[in-house]
Length: 163
Image 1 (cartoon, rainbow, N blue to C red):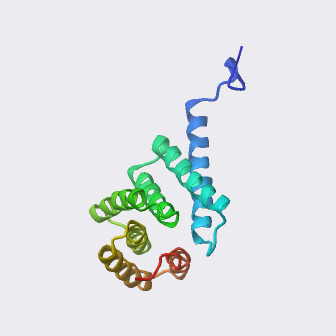
Image 2: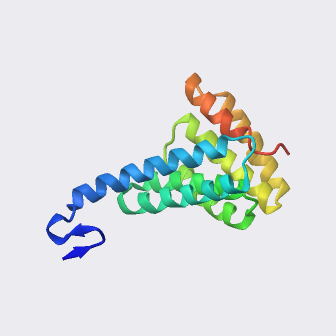
């Protein structure tokens, strides 16, 4: 008997499924951030960015930690902000901000959190919140110790409109 392309006797184990869920989460996450970093996105790429961000979040929801889920919300906040979907962007960015505000986070993650919230606030039409978090993201981004982490941050932060 065949079910979803697998013979019943060939069903993957729970461990195999978890391994693939994690792989898909990582691949989708990386693709979405790659598209976030693009200075210009076609409508098709915008669509792909949102789908990849949501796919990553869906997979992390099944196999990830609270940290993975918070990072997924950070990505969703940024992606929806860049797609001009302000209320949704703000919801995801605030969720990530709340998590990272309550937990220890490396310097780059703190900067990203404020950048996503700034982008979401801009998309949601909240200039005060946008200005506040843009300035904090900029300050924290300049203080990122590792040059590679700072470079990654700056590529994404460059997509956040200045106040």
